[in-house]
Length: 313
Image (cartoon, rainbow, N blue to C red; front, side, top):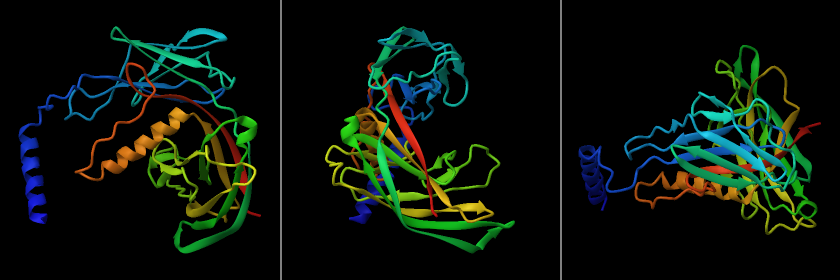
């Protein structure tokens, strides 16, 4: 059986090497891709790229010269007036910020190469929750000392109760950090924004609540579907596991961020995870990623976050 599978893989590899310019009749015409997750009172940052023109090209190129407009019921359309030429490239505005109103429709319209794509979303209500910290243990790893800086492991439990009754909202995300300014380097490893920094932060947590799933890249932490959650009785118990490197003193706090997200954003992230898992198996079926962009691909969604500092002592 193993010999047959190996032979099939070798045949497929040889065939693909000869057909590297052939797309097997699949429509590979470039499609616009939107990536925009916006938060109240932040700047607009609307990434706009184009899919590769071939199955053998993996480069998503920025779309320049597009007309990108944002509108709400209470505000006339505003055209984004700046294209920031960084990978992958995005549109923003020097004067207009994301509105602070929740549960009001926000519409995106993009005109590029004669085509119009659009989407609609909203900013969810701010999350309301209570937390309790249990059994926290911080341990210094002396054998990892570098220039007088130490690595500390952190374990414990966090009990989270979300008040879904007061807001009527059911979809959330949660992440845990020591340094809240950390951004993703790659899954499981965090880097500071400055490229020459060697600090890292890998605090993570796990929960067994049904409907929770670990997400990758865009939403570090968990997305939570609490449609089966009873706020009067149910608790979310997060088991904390992780470490923080390059500290002079023992850490005495963690930063927990709870974010209200839209159902569309939850579906988008869940499909991203499904696609990642399918990509690990050469014989798996392809996964279509969910999106809410009419005439294109990607996600346009509001979020609303609350950050809480949890003191150990």
